[in-house]
Image 1: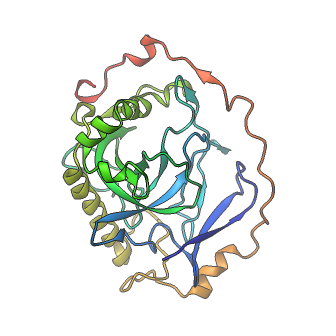
Image 2 (image 1 turned 45 degrees about the vertical axis):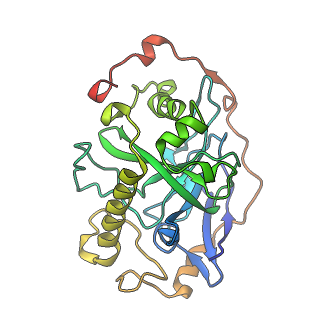
Length: 299
């Protein structure tokens, strides 16, 4: 299936939205794009929310009908990730695996914390810089368990199947041999990226250890099962999430394409992006004192 997208409003502003489309019209990147892009090889679909090296915190909106990608907000302002030396923005392509959900009512057996209420996150460590709204197939290689403000926030590690290194990478140890340092940098980035805002370092389960591909597959399938319960059983949606979709058979939230198309009526036309914040290229240098705070399980 080929996907395109349509943007509205002003990027880096509060009115910006990006809707995914297939040949029939508007689709939900949360519900309509299949979990797997290639069942035989077990390649997962990835919805790219944030291209590498960029700072705007874009994400699938779970509460807006048809789940557009939009910029996260805090206190009425759009959010940008700050640069913590030596990293510039996000150091990989960042996004989500569709048809997954980390149920905030379920305590994860591995982390002891409840889910964060979002589709499961995935990073693509391949060389190519993606674009916002891109749907790509990735090979899952492993996973780490971030504890973000008391919530389980799994981070799947994967690589674009078209990357030149993809044939060499099939599990975590292959990454260590072929791309030395990327796992350590990934752990450090997730641990420290909120420090410039005044927050404490993030915490991890498993002492920050990256789990292997088989473990990652199990976690993804658990979140896929939680998504199924969300989208197939109307009385379980206690989180007021937007579950409208155009393709999930048996879903009480399934709607006609005409209704889905209605979400883009009366939206503002796409205009030139807003001016980025003056400090977007500022580099923050973190002291040992800022970074040394102990995290869960001693990480």
